[in-house]
Amino acid sequence: MRGFRQALAAVLIFCAGPMAAQELIGAYTAFIGTDDLYNSKGARLTQPWQVLRQDRANFHRFGIRQPGDEWDPFFGSIDNRAAMERMIMNGRIDPGARQNLLQGGATVFVRIYGAGGVGRYVNVTVAR
Image 1: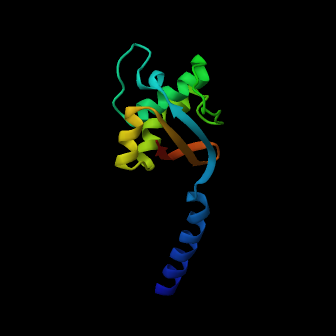
Image 2: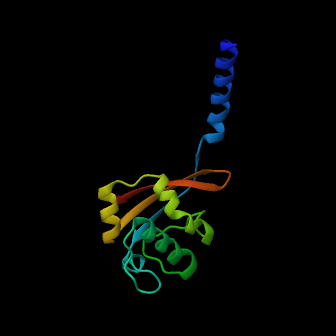
């Protein structure tokens, strides 16, 4: 019985691997300008996900773009932009990059990972 359980566990781990694997479903580069640091009511944004979400809303919805902003295949959807907070929390942005992003005047490279067209997390790199 013990051998059967071990074999079953190995099969389950093997099968879960590909299903759990996340693939790159999109990527973009954007310049974070002053317009991206404030919401549509004029309030200063204080979290990286807020700034990144505003940047994508500016790009896709409002047509506000800075030189260096690129189109992306994912955040044109308002629902996908709403998921950005969760995706950043599940992803990676280091503290120094976070600070540079919140100051503006930085370029971000965002990689979107998921499966079946559903975004799960993003990794954000920031350069000055």
